[in-house]
Image (tube, rainbow, N blue to C red; front, side):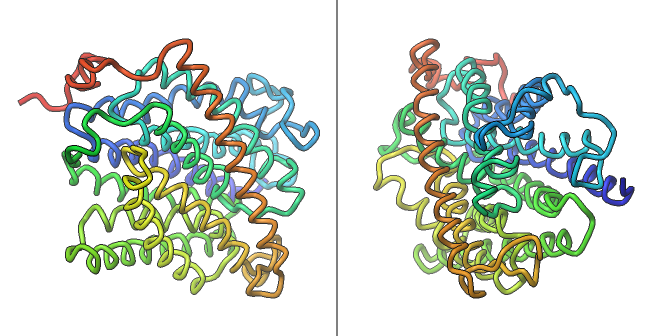
Length: 403
């Protein structure tokens, strides 16, 4: 056991946890004031629900001993065998590894909630989130990080481009389509009620993302330091490129554009952060800001109501970042990784493409099935009267602002 590594990963676990309240604040500011609490409730409730499910069985499905490259077995059910002893192959306690990975399981379904904010029944959200963690998150996590078949194939995902961002982006697209559009969508503007909150939330996300990416090295070493730096550079570049794209197309750079661009850069660098250098990180962030902005602009033309742009930012960013890893990865940065296309190995790009295609297909199909199951049992949407009144009062009996 290495004390420095253990302390580092524990600190990174706390940083990743704070991203979920940061996400709640980010999302809450983007909604109508009558839905701010219900939107934030999604993230805060998952801090409880996902944490308990993780210890009971989701961790075991994700990181338990491999069964055919597809799923982990249930040997760690209720935390069995997860002790303070060093986890095999690492220098940190098994309990610390379990804690760190659990923070990712909290925020991933929380990210999806932005797609159906302001209109989904809370009971349906709870059941869907639990089912999604079980049947979508756990298998993909195992394939990529738990000695599953994609990991054995050579797919690189340093901190969650496939497992978190693309996975949640695809699920968000399905949810936006199946749940349906908000009342009045397309005929009136849906304006964020408090961009001050949104900017505060992005600040917390940016801060926590250092733990998200650097911590995924699971050791306090040079690769972790590189992931820390590339994370910051990609976020900075994404914020700038989105703002300048807005400035060119709409004559005004907005605070929301800077915030969204930073998140696009952060999501895109996530799979690559421990495998690419500074110059590559800047390119990844610059491209992310522009293509994610274009994706967000196109959603009305494509006809789906993704309330808080989960698809355009996390879905598109996850695709770009994963493929960019296949372009820019270098063993000079991380000996345990691979060289990408621009460093003489076109095979890695093909492998990354397979990872993207498999994640999209699996997440889309299974999420679709789960949503229709929940719809058949509980229904998905609040009533029209409840939507008019606001989900804060109809679902929770509270208001965010009492003047």
